[in-house]
Length: 109
Image 1: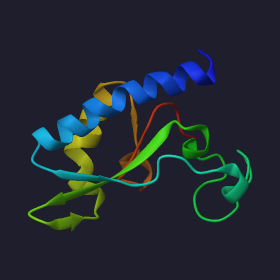
Image 2 (image 1 turned 90 degrees about the horizontal axis):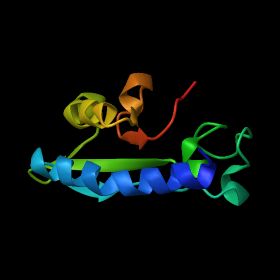
Image 3 (image 1 turned 180 degrees about the vertical axis):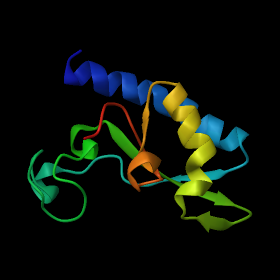
Image 4 (image 1 turned 135 degrees about the vertical axis):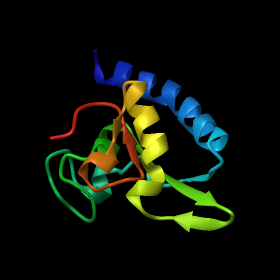
């Protein structure tokens, strides 16, 4: 599958992720979806925050901010029900590598 095809598949999966989060009772806002390599370095180069080979640089990752009752849920455990659902859909959840609000498509090292 080409990168563009992966990006298209990932983009088509995101509405379901957000809808499922809402169905679980979360309020959702968007975090990082794309990290411009002109600012964050090309893939494989660490510049600024984030990993050198960040899937955000390839447009294959998004960070979601979850809230319940107006309170920001910053812990990985708060994302677990959504993250495990995302994995069942074929995605990769950052809760497996200490980045609970990270949802991506592809295998992370």
